[in-house]
Length: 130
Image 1 (cartoon, rainbow, N blue to C red):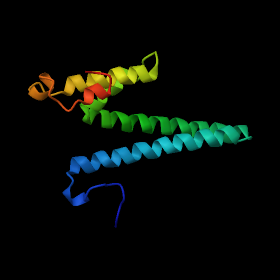
Image 2: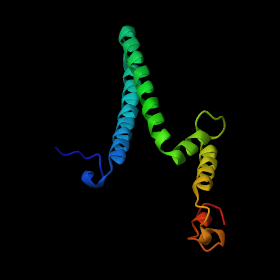
Image 3: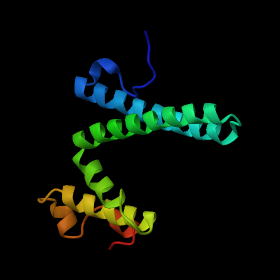
């Protein structure tokens, strides 16, 4: 039985990586379901039907949140980035840029001599950092 959820041969992936991929797939499916429920609710004329759909939508929010938390607990840099964006007030793009920089700084190797002496790849300059 073949599955398209892996981009590398499944037999070469660790059990942890396969679980991570499954949870990413689940997260995607929950996000799609949330979008579908929003669309259905917006056009459904029957109040009782809308109420049931709202109840189902709440379940999708719960599942999405649980799966996201599972993934964040296993990926510290993702968690660090999300922490700088989620549940914050202000411009989302600015928060994202700041969170990405903070996560990059927190996960950068301390012994990266090329970056320390300015002989790196120059990627920082592409992001407005020299």
